[in-house]
Amino acid sequence: MLNIIFINQKAYKDTLVGKELLHLLNKSVLLNTEWGCFTDHYDEISLNIALDNLVYNINNFLHSRKFENIIIGWSFEDIELINQLVAHLDSEDAQISIFNLTDTAIDNINSFELLNKEYHKDYYTLQSTGQLIKMSYVDTTDCSAFKIAHILSMIIQ
Image 1 (cartoon, rainbow, N blue to C red):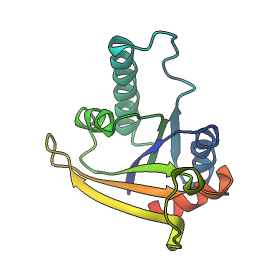
Image 2 (cartoon, rainbow, N blue to C red; image 1 turned 60 degrees about the horizontal axis):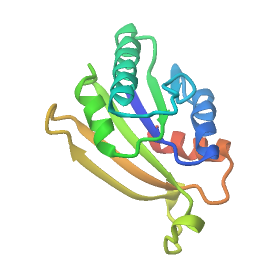
Image 3 (spheres, one colour; image 1 turned 45 degrees about the vertical axis):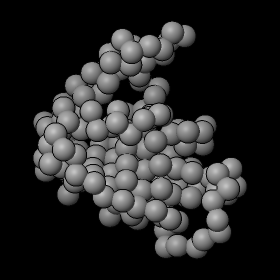
């Protein structure tokens, strides 16, 4: 199955998760903030350029048919940015997953113990394409980047 995996990075540890996930999933490629847009003046124009570059790269990976897992790690302040990206992707055959990594010690989330530490998941249909998107929140409290990547790989597979 073809997977497009968005990792919403909020902390330094989160930026390492994509690199670890790359090694756990077969036929994978990673696009993360290290390739993207760096500027002291981050405005709408630079954001649109970065998003346009993401769409171009992801579509190229999709068309190559070489990869089964396309991992995108970036700090998406607004889920609407991901929805805009997906609307421009040739991804009708792909499962799209968004992982929001959270630290329950920081977020003051009530105690819980759920399988795979996925404490909330939701599905929604993107209006512009009709594509189903899964959005998950995963507890990363006291987890290494490798362990987080392992948890995500178990959810994806």
